[in-house]
Image 1 (tube, one colour):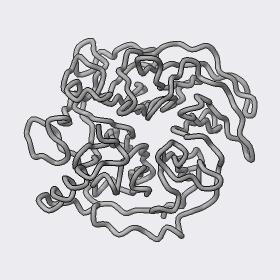
Image 2: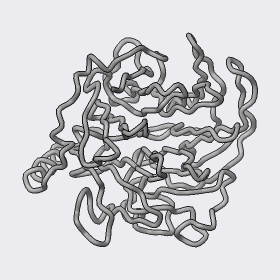
Image 3: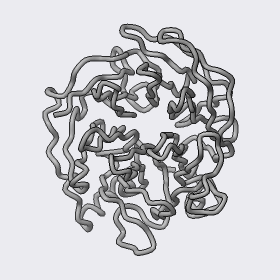
Image 4: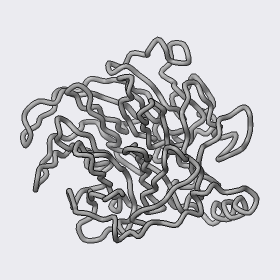
Length: 351
């Protein structure tokens, strides 16, 4: 099965052929901004495959995929808040996305035979945070060595959104009764909201291969980044009940049965993971593409680029409480080339 981050020659050949026959969006030809003007200072370093960042009362919490640790970042140090029990790391699985909501930490992780989301009360003050007992929010999400999705976030409606990859079962992405290949929507306690598009189902949208980023703009529009396979990685605008085509189509297909992405990229320039809305822009962290892509919300078919190749693989991008942008590198995840100090979280200057 092709990897999300290191496609075989056949995949590259398909991408090249598609480039000749499909009109690329302006983003594919955009000139990157000079990377040297974007780097600021390091927030944290020597992390072990960090995956996600969330904030509790202004304090940054970080998940590490393989160690299953939750770290608390101080002004000049980092400490372990706790280790999430039951994590079974391997391949792309492990402790993945985290989110904070009303004093609780929500965690998405790969366990034996499944992915699941749990929540724990956060107690204590900065520098001495603690986690309470785990309460399951949702379990039984299919897992595999690849395509686990894993991003979680609370929308402007107060609901929990969860990205679930197809876990290698392509056809399940089109099955509304399967949890894989979907974006899910739940109440914080795990209940299914009455206004979900499918009766008694947590499914919010379907036809996804491996979505790993979700964010909302000020108007409440939802965006998601997604790893493609043979041809295109995608940026999608998510609609309730929308079908985004996988595995029937990939990229812009102009098929009335599916919703096309608003932007697409060849995988060697992308492999998009975490995304964030900052002001009037959507920011996208790219793994294989090793760049931060900036998409203006008033022009979703164009983009510019920052720190291309300067930091290596980028797993996540977040806006800190003071409005400064943080990016999370992933050079120690088994596919990168770690440098001294990796992995790290770095502040980025955005004009």
